[in-house]
Image (cartoon, rainbow, N blue to C red; front, side, top):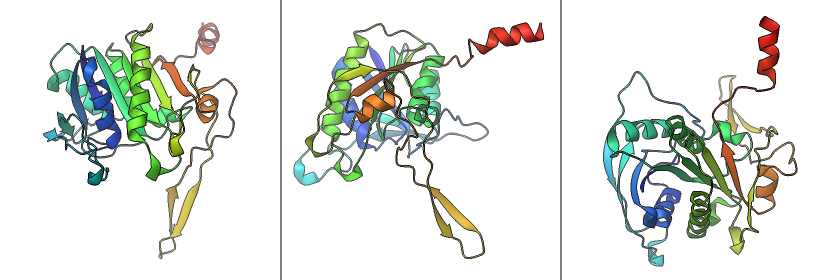
Length: 267
């Protein structure tokens, strides 16, 4: 199996490196990822400017890890792309990775992508681009409480288990399986795994305001993954309850209830 691995946190992100290690035995893994962080870029793509592409060789120590820990892993040589996550997938399929590609995996993102976050997410956007092209795709994200306490190795272990569970199931082309891993701080472990629908609750937006000195102000978003509602049975509720969540996503956004009404209305 030929796998394309990408993300939206950039090619040096720890989540990408540990996920490579977790899926290396599944097949031939090709890494094509953004040169730098592209969080919340959704499905944006690049036009009207050239895109820089360069070879990248991973270190033998996980990025951000304390070298004294000796946390070695199987390194890889990948491709760094100076553009968005969706661009990485488009370029990989068109030019950078031998065909056919059997599966696209995006992640592990530092931060959950549940509820309305799937609309904003560059991690999900990359997977969705693959689904557009008829490829099965998986997006993986890690819910974070303490950014300094992310257990990347544990996250990758659970991600690998969830990915294998998906590959053993009724996964089809044009589908994105959105996987989220609960907070693992302080030695916490997931309670299990649940398939759940996306929550439709909006988020509570918060902004830090700083005077600019000329009468204007700077507003910086500081959202802390707070949802207005935690609807029972949804991905948000299950994730916050400590479960790994799996949600199949489709990209047909037509409203099947409204469309017949409008067809009748306009004759």
